[in-house]
Length: 198
Length: 93
Image (cartoon, rainbow over all chains, first blue to last red; front, side, top):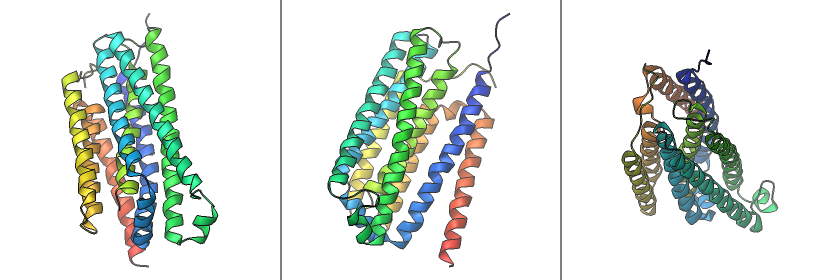
């Protein structure tokens, strides 16, 4: 007797979890929107301090990584193991570069006295304190999601090499991919809200 | 629904990536033109289009059954209600 698997059930479960993630970040975006309406000038001044270059580069990196994962899922469906592995490795590399960029970017902010509770923010205009508070919470939470996503992709990578993920049984890869795409999807909104409101 | 999942061809995925990169360029370009408060709405509109493309193609939502498609729309509706009511509250304080 072979074990029964329920691919569509696993997918539905993953989506239900992703809905809670959408509402989690949605709540933070509402917070952003309400304070943006109240402190528009301060938010624009805050956004001007962010480096657009890092924002654009990280956006491009995440889009490419999403493509890699999607190509990996397609490859696995076609039972093409090597291309699937290449896609996963590519996406993991993109995730790593994203986190390095984030580290450099946050480092610059810290060096300029911009970090939660810093003298510059506490004594400055209240709206800028709110802007950077939201910036650190939202990009920090998103960065945490990148790390979790990379962990899931790495697990998928190992399972593909061990033939535990196959063309017939690829729910783990599919769901890890969905998680990764959602993290990309959230960044698609973070990018204009924090970098482009200048 | 059939348990067979739809296979999205590499070419489709490549074109999707190209479209997303072009839209990223468009949104950066649009932000450099000062149109006042309209800028925010243009940026959010382009972001929504990009998110829609990722959702439909990369996340395979276009080929999913009604359960997933409608439950996703219900989530978006829930978000809209949440955002709407909070702004309603803030606006009349």
